[in-house]
Amino acid sequence: MFDRILFPIDDSDGAVAIRESIYALAATHDATLHVLNVADTAHDSVTRIGDEVVDALEIKGEELVTETASQAAERGIPTKTAVIQGGVAATITKYAATADIDLIAMPTQGRTGIEERLLGSTTERVSRETPVPLLTLRPDATPLATPFERLLVPTDGSDTASSAIGVGIDLAAVNSSTLQLLSVTDTSLFGSELQADQYVDSLRETASEIVADAHDRATAAGVDDVVTAVAEDESVVAGIQSYAADADSDCIVVGTHGRTGLDRYLLGSVTETLIRTASIPVLVVPPTDHDTEA
Image 1 (cartoon, rainbow, N blue to C red):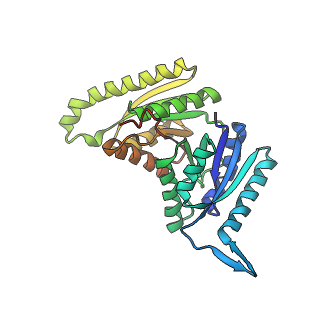
Image 2: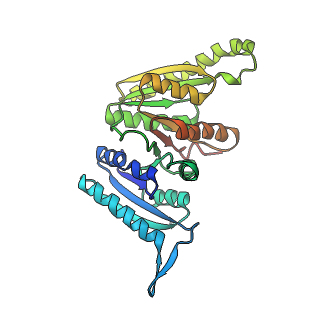
């Protein structure tokens, strides 16, 4: 399913910490691992050694990708390496498109302070623009156990959520995973307890129909173990995280924004909050061409 995995690496603690997880992921999928370092053109890195003009960032990048590829090769994983100058997020997404990448894998954060904010924002920018699924991994978590055994796919019935369900179904079918389908009603939208009483039953019924339709889609695709649930919480993110903890989910599969305006803002906000705060990997699925039509 993921035949070509892209691992953008720099010398941050976050990127280095997830290398073992990346190797496990590539081995599980018999994938070629593309190891990319972006020599960020936002920084002046050109210097002179003797009569030769060199780029310090490119030299460091070559060391990083060579070391990572060597470690992967020791585990029997085929690799391709590249060091490219450019803006980090834009270069990553462009490489993914031109190299026919199936999956990008990145850390959610670096160490602390400014590094964490910068690396986190890079991952979030990639999540908004990526043409392929993006797997975000916490550097402070134990090395990834693959394949995933319990995949949680939150859905609100939208086209973008449908894209995430499709990837979740494919991944569950390939790995014989349990597929957990969840729809969360945001109770903070109600202005009063009376309004909640008036609408919650209707919304719960709609949510049940949404997960039932997704269940039928999954079983028709050959997924044997499908679980459905509906929940109410003060926020969609809180509902997703609460369910993930109770159900021992090991990956959340979620769609990113579709067209423009409010739908884009709300779904993007949920996805980016999950990337920053979830204790387990988050697989971000971009919309299909159909989803992005105006």
